Length: 129
Image 1 (cartoon, rainbow, N blue to C red):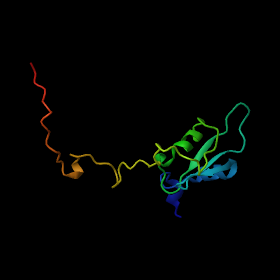
Image 2 (image 1 turned 180 degrees about the horizontal axis):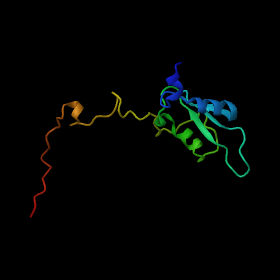
Image 3 (image 1 turned 90 degrees about the vertical axis):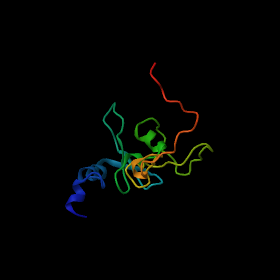
Image 4 (image 1 turned 45 degrees about the vertical axis):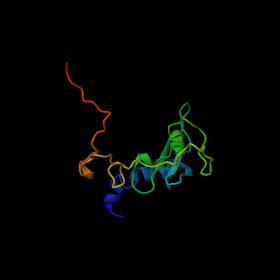
């Protein structure tokens, strides 16, 4: 690990975050992506305990599943359980793929050759009166 790894926040936690976590952090859990979640061991009177995440791999906020996002923002006080049953209408969490080769590209996108299907007979362009 080089000097730049300690100074770049987008690759992993900074040295300050690592020291703060070591000194004041209490591990709470790990999600399916390997992100680790922490909260303060204690908080001043009248304050909530801070909560934070140390990302596994590249720092990307959209890699936090919804149940952990709710816990981080104090919407839920219950720590999410890995084996929690999902409703049949719930889809698995997917991180934001914008800017990656797997990003959604609609028909007509520049990266797809800027070709769209021609319009069908149900389209009438607006004409000024």
